[in-house]
Length: 226
Image (tube, rainbow, N blue to C red; front, side):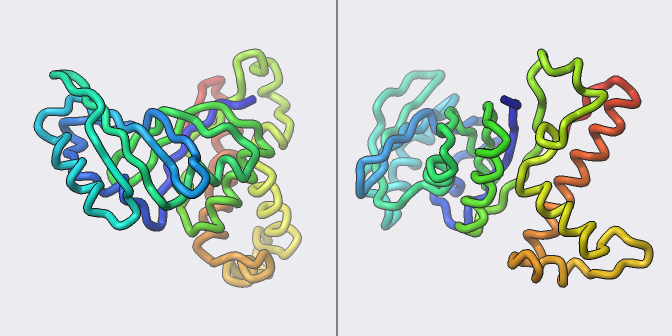
């Protein structure tokens, strides 16, 4: 199971708008649980300084938030528990993909930063589930476990690309997108796959990036981070 690192920009997500200066403090979602018609989570802020009460006021001012309160605070760490009526985008997309939600999740510059391990088929379904919510998913790292290093000079395509990325690359080749001259535009390719031009561009770019960096890594023997 590969290690993954990704950044998700939700279409609407109050947690990415918290009044916390990311240059001086870090914010993480430590846990989240489904309560049928609600969800409850715990935020960690390090160091809390004077920001805890402003975060609580911000959360309680949002229509989706049922409650928010400080659970613990000292000079180094502050914990806030909140309950929301809305389904958290990333959490439920992971459940829909059959994957276990990964915590902690860092919140920085309007994005949710996720690191953990996820099977390729579930990662592909996770991407698709996020697409359905109009969230933007930027996969920055897919790394094989150390015990698979011996295979890196002849990688299996399933270990290199997600199923979704494979589908787009195969369709692009089929329709002549990589021919010279091209027999298909990006817009036409997107229409054939029933996605927006932006989504097609992002998926192709991530797949191409993975292929090129795997090629360079095999030539140089040096790990290349996405």
